Image (cartoon, rainbow, N blue to C red; front, side, top):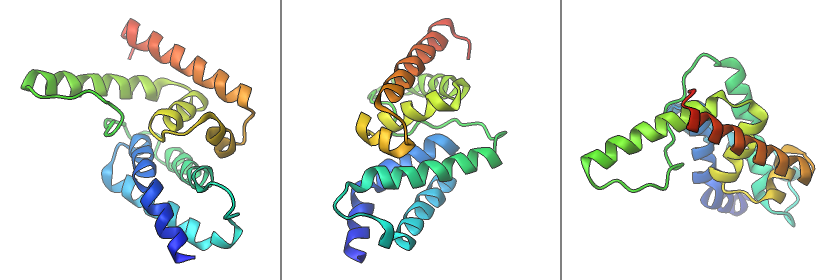
Length: 164
């Protein structure tokens, strides 16, 4: 059982941390939520069907913890998008523009309704497939695709109009 948990941490630890960081904007809090995710997974390992992929199960735990954290800490601004941007920065100008773009993207994501923000984060930060998102959020495939499409549309609209 412990080997299974170690494999889960090795495979999903970074993705869950990045998801928690995106929700909280705080590295320490993201680490705490990541640890809590794996602590809860360990406590409930006997409920996990080892014939299934652990990703959706772990992300469901992490997403629920993040939702609870958001409910209790709504006023906390989210500023970090560590691991979200694929842009490389080599010069001081690129570093500055990358930071500004990340802040703008973080603000735009934060202004989206939670149902859209969640599927975008699971898809792009959690690097989950549509099927994994369906299992994680207990949603039908058509609803996941719709929310992802609509969320991306709203996000693009916010970024283009600069309404963040």
